[in-house]
Length: 184
Image (cartoon, rainbow, N blue to C red; front, top):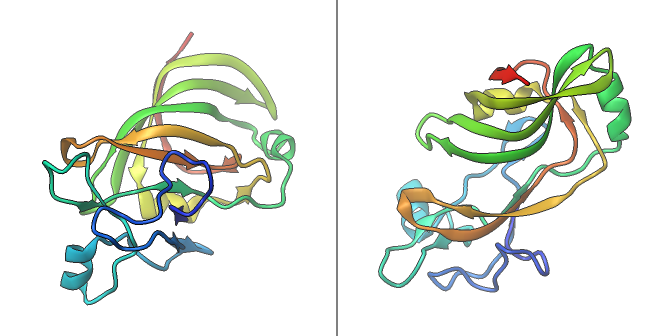
């Protein structure tokens, strides 16, 4: 979900930089792509309506479609139960920077705080871990969603322009994802 109407969030506004009213846009629902984020130009090219995502760093730049407050909706599961269900894995507490190829959906993200999970228990920290994959494919792998949604602030750096954003996700379990890193 991308929602620029949320009160008191860093990516919220009443109108985007093209004058389109802010709105809530469901991007993926039940593992199915429902909508893209559009500015006026990309909407026109795709025969769609703008989703109010035409943003720019300043008036020196042209607006481009980009995130506002983007998050995975919370589910009903307790986060502790999700962790207990993992035999061996990585618990990612905090993400760092990353990149997404908007053409094919490939991504790489830095894990700034992560811990090994062994027999359903959070154990020692890991450093230098990264998560890589293809966004649409990885989203299909999510099989558990927690009820503990928490927002963080950030900056969208698309095309070298910084724009204030928020992002959030509850605890989720992704059984198949490429992880790289070293133990400490």
